[in-house]
Image 1 (cartoon, rainbow, N blue to C red):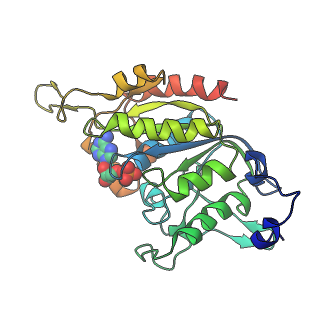
Image 2 (cartoon, helix red, strand yellow):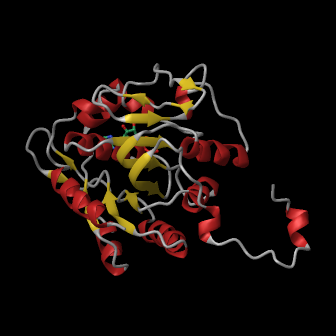
Length: 277
Ligand code: ADP
């Protein structure tokens, strides 16, 4: 085992390269593409967007999984109505739970005795858990594994960026965000680790008046598309504030989502995902 003190005086010690830090996933896994979904702060709808992407890609026939890396604020199991499911462990590893439509999920919430138990852990333990979701979970064959990241560019995103061979990241913004700051931070972090940015999705862009159908930009004009253009990052699309969508998430029925406003964004995303790497 590597000991930091030992390495200190070892003349052959060399700085770790990116490849040294990448962890192998479980030997039973065949995961074609890994994509992390990031946001600058909580509450912009990152988990919802991650879930929607997985649901829609599953409908298109792909094998999909979601690794809930938001250890202190896990919401994926609830969105899928899977919070009472329990993953099966055996001597080979631990298996994710499977939703109605066959999305595979692993989340700390599925391992806690009670879903509303808080996770009061320090950073290293949280990062170690996320790593184990990659190394010890038997995901099997997946076309896409989506990582729902905690907000910001802290410990966990850094750990995932360093330990997982990511194919790309998607940034979720909202019009009231400090978009350019957030996008620049995520962009610089990803760039320094050679991870491509697949694109930006703006959530809560507008609402539609239920009476007259008028489009209301509640948070004003969007800045996301302009920032994306300036930074040469693809802008994938925008999602409205939709009470039906919030309702489906609350009921754990995201897989029943049947509106088409995500279609164009999804088609662009599918093309981009096919070409990354
Ligand atoms: P984050 O992962 O960024 O913290 P969530 O995905 O948990 O955010 O979303 C926060 C809350 O906002 C949830 O209750 C979710 O249902 C709601 N929400 C997010 N996006 C929308 C939307 N487009 N329309 C309606 N409600 C939304």
